[in-house]
Image 1: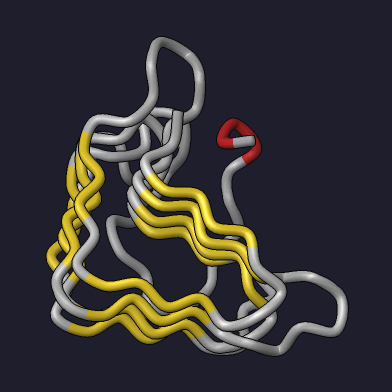
Image 2: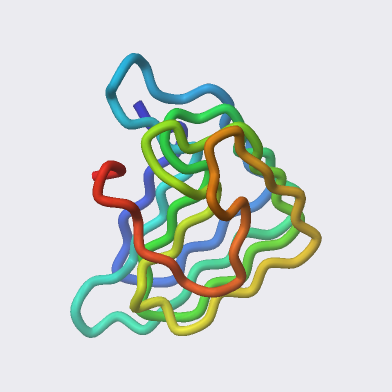
Length: 124
């Protein structure tokens, strides 16, 4: 089970999210799954304020967008038992900007990335 899942054809804006300990057993569980990568959409994703997306079975934050993504003050730790990163952006996201981040994982190859990375095959 995912803490927050948003599917939109337009801009996604969220602030001050807390999503801790999502995912049970081998089922995926993202802290926040934000998606607006539909044909024709160029809107972005903005996560403002301070967010804590930690202890989730999959990624803490997963973004899929054809537009730019801006993420401020993100804490994402101990995520990713099924995937390699705490924050994952779909490869078509134009630009991902992370500011004020504090990210780490027990199983991560890369804890936080300011460039888009594809999800691992095991995270699907």
